[in-house]
Amino acid sequence: MTAGGILLVDKPGGLTSHDVVARARRSLGTRKVGHAGTLDPMATGLLVIGVDAATRLLTFAVGLDKTYEATMRLGEATNTDDAEGEQTVQTDASSLTAEQIEAALQPLRGAISQVPSTFSAIKVDGRRAYDLARSGEDVQLKAREVIVSRLEVVAERRHGSVVDLDVIVDCSSGTYIRALARDLGSSLGVGGHLTALRRTRIGPFSVSDAVGPDDVDRGRLRGSALVASEILGRFDVTAEEARDLRHGKRLAGAADRLPASPIAAVAPDETLVGIVERRGADVKSAMNMPEGDSA
Image (cartoon, rainbow, N blue to C red; front, side):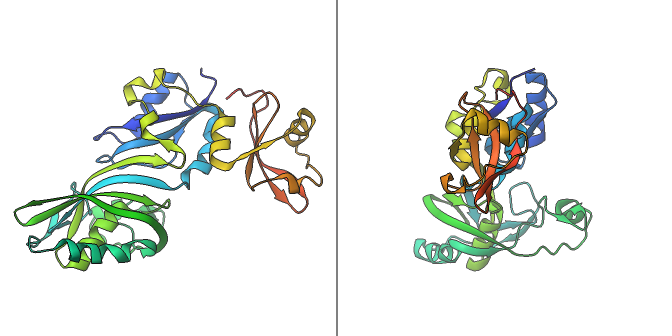
């Protein structure tokens, strides 16, 4: 049994996020393992894995901004908006100019309304959209507001009738990079889909610090206090305040000490007391870690 913490894993292509979690459970000898943010089997890159008590922190990591490296192919569309689907459109894109592509990219930047890919894990009446789509049902997903703070073409390659764009995307949680490729191709009238996707960052965490799924037992477990402080910021409390928070008591009149809300409350021994938030003039626990947890 491990002391718990957060582990960064670099998922290879061909594995599901659940596959990586299963390997971590076996390697670390604990069933209490989860992840923050699924990657499709085709995709590679960063998974944030929570172990034991630190799984409680994953809910705060799910909504963090992310960075992706991707390849978008113009001239072909698929029913899944990625390379694993069946081709639905093939149009000669060879005459597209860099200026036309840039003009079509511009509306996809900033705060945008995006319809997720039909073959996504979003639930519709309790069922996954991809299960409905695969069974032949007509799936109509609602648009959602997302933020694409960066959508930059770093390389362009032309192969016959198709144009491949290597891009870097900084975006809010919930953004579908496949949908960006689909919408870019649609706006240009040639169809588009994703041929490669790699997640390189989740909030403060980088794939450069990650280990492979076969090296999970040799990876560095990041302590809960450090991770929670990186995600939410740090609020130092006294030993007495830590005890009160763990017992469900509020810190009266302490709200003006909080630089942010919610925030990680850290005890003098560098253990994470929990996540606290403002309640009027007081500070109240939103989530407590198990007392004595060293993660």
